[in-house]
Structure formats: C-alpha cells, structure tokens
Length: 173
Image (cartoon, rainbow, N blue to C red):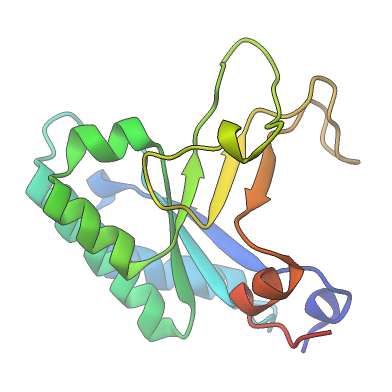
C-alpha cells in the first residue's frame, strides 16, 4: 500500500478519450503507464468519453470505448466510464449503452445548471436517467480546494464509506 492509500486517499487515474488518435488499447496502456510510473498502485482507470470528431460513427466510438475499457482491465485496473447522459444517449444505441454500463461503472457528469452553483438537497435531486456509481455536479458557489484557483465541481459516490473503500480496493476500517 502506498502513502496515499495508506492515508485514506482513494487513488485513480483519468484519461480523456482521443478517438482521433487511434488505437484505444495503446491509449489505455499509456494512461496506465503514466499513472504508475512512480511505482504507485492505481486501482481505478477512468475513461472520459464525452466527445468525438463528428465523422466518428457510433459503431467506431463504441468499439473504441470497449477496447479501451478491456485494456484497462487487462492492466490490472478496474475501469470507470465518465460521461454525460446527453452524449451517451446521442451517440450510442440502447444495447450499446447497456454493454458499456455493464463493462464499467458510470461516473456521471450531470449538472443542473451551467450558470448557477447547486448541490443536491435529497435523493430526489439526484439523476435517474442512468445507473451511476459516482456523480459530478456543480459545486456550491465558492467551493474551493486548496491549490486550485477557482470554484470546483463536487462528486457524490452512491454508497457508504465502506462501499467507497471497496470501490477503490481499500481494506475495511
């Protein structure tokens, strides 16, 4: 266990999909290699899939995502898919969406407003369009993290602390 996970921090790596750059398996390997270059163990590898060149067919985009997720899994990381509901709905058939969501848990980027900060008041405020493991939403106005010179989005994990620890492969407390 490295110092970060030993301190209770949940470690993962994030890669933005570059369909136009070709070979998704090579991109996933590169993300993994970059994340683990210092010897750190990374449990989760996230594919950010929220755009593609207009000429990319749904089939090609689906193949790219599946190949990336499979290579991440072969690397020893449990993959996560990060995307928007509108992108998933517009670019994939319902069968392809089901396949992707079965291949990796969804970290959903869904904001109630792009102009006003907002935080959920109850379960009723949370998205219902897709099953999600984590949800990124607009943060409270003025929500700051030390070292970041601007307001930050917030993330909510669907589950308790024990489930979150399990999600990142950490031992139960």
